[in-house]
Length: 381
Ligand SMILES: Cc1ncc(COP(=O)(O)O)c(C=O)c1O
Image (cartoon, rainbow, N blue to C red; front, top):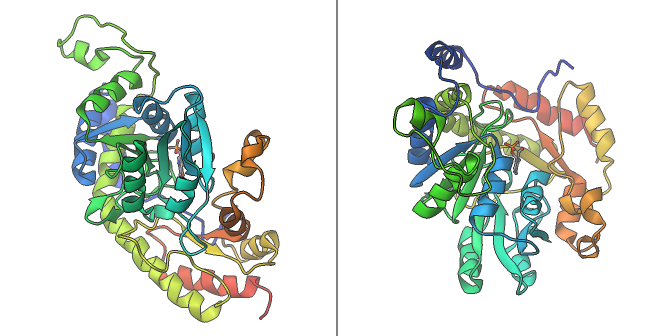
């Protein structure tokens, strides 16, 4: 479909083409100098001691769950209002995801009070997801983690460049997990990154990323190692050099692009308040500085969401839903503890949520078109 205003768009140009071409001409395609440089540059950007590039954020989340020591039947508290990968990664380790509610319809991130309510003697970790790039209440979450001796993993897939109290998101907990999927604030097509300040954890993550092996092909290519041992049950979650090269170019653009996203979001807020005051636009009160990954709105209660989205489509505006709550998916909802009605704020907000287009190349006129389309797509007041 040829959208007048798509939901998201990439910012790729000549620099990205050149970066990939250079790798191809260099003839070393996986986990070499580009990857090492990408990791160095990303760790400097995030302000973490270590950055470890991987295949995608789902792999990052899986390795993070292993690295904090999750085992069979351990419990991990996380939001249900997230992409399913957040919960699936917990299950890959045999641990059990326990869903907590979100704070409110204005603040769609996990509620510290709800986290505390779900703690049992089996709870080992909290997995916080910075929805749309907006910070979870990390001060309260870290305080709970200290009191109950829990690990904290940040699903920062949405939050590349977001900050809270002078610290980038992804550096508050033990491990941060980032996504470079094609709709993210910077992209390598598929790709992901882990960040941590913990030397031992970084070492374990690197070993788990590549089959549990103690040396890489790159080390052997460089003559640093002749053989290797296998010391852990690892995976192949490596990134390739083409993606790492793309990531380095994209990282140089991400701060300016995040600023443009902030300006577009402010324009949306102004126009929607004027044209469609019955719409709720969450995150009016900023907690830290967001990278404005997506633009969620909540329709008035009782609005037919599918009809609304169809009407937007008729005007060439692509919309989406972030997210159907994970506890309502077939493979999760069969468990009594994840029954409907247990997460009332999540269920009410998720049923009314629609995501509007947001990407750095969007023009002010595009935002105006979308805002007018919202007015026309809503039942008349
Ligand atoms: C919140 C969240 N977590 C995890 C992921 C998984 O990321 P990836 O597609 O890089 O595996 C995504 C991706 O869309 C996401 O939005």
